Image (cartoon, rainbow, N blue to C red; front, side, top):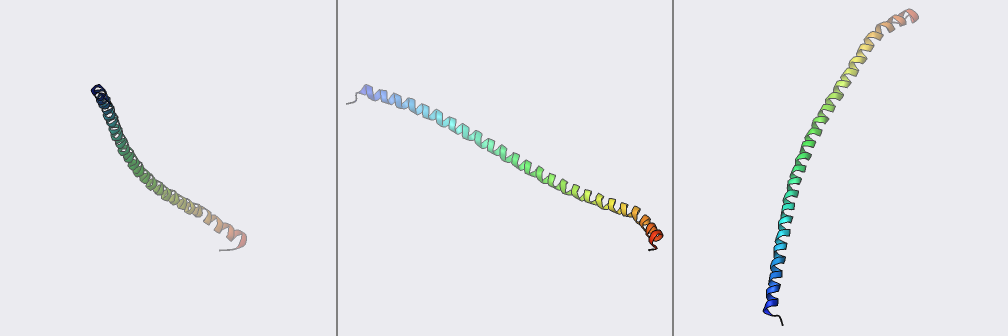
Length: 97
């Protein structure tokens, strides 16, 4: 049979265990808050990266168009230089127009 001292000792142990549990719950709660904050920061970074990626994609597309335009201009320039020479050569050598 438990004596009153045993009951008081058990209650003291229970109170100590309750304090430890409360402390652990506070720590877990704090960790959850920190994790939630980190998740928000991570989500914001992903959003910024996504926006930067879209901007980079637009810039690459525009650059591709510009390079294509330069290629076309260079081709026209080359044709402009070569065509008169070719007409002269074809006319002189082969009698062609």
